Length: 179
Image (cartoon, rainbow, N blue to C red; front, side, top):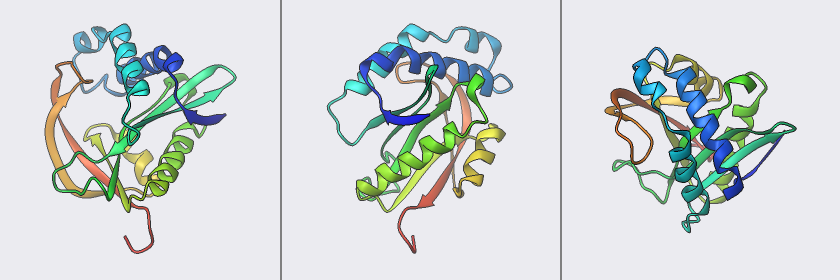
């Protein structure tokens, strides 16, 4: 398995993973009708735009094995008003195909993201997790991330979609010693 920058050709695979992971991770959080209505082709367009976006501070990483793309991570500067976008990077999305879980794919993507943040000069990194997504929260905690006390209510939706309101909590990790 390797991790590389995504290309436009990866957009359909990313969208498929995005929809499958939402259906698995949020089956006890979102109504079945919401999960059934997820549109893979619309998400493929979204990911194609993100992958080809001219903003070099936002990147999409993919994990690839013999079967193709098995996970992805979207990163960029924080958008949180209480953090400095020049000093704090943010994991905006991390998804591993449910059929490929438990093989270290998420850890490899997260390690690469930390490397990307460090090379970009960020001092810390954050991410937001749905409060009820216990599996994801355990994963981040085992990787050394900790909640920082911030939470908010927001719609659980991809860009351009409407979604159910959920509570999300913020996790943070220092990227340089002493932070």
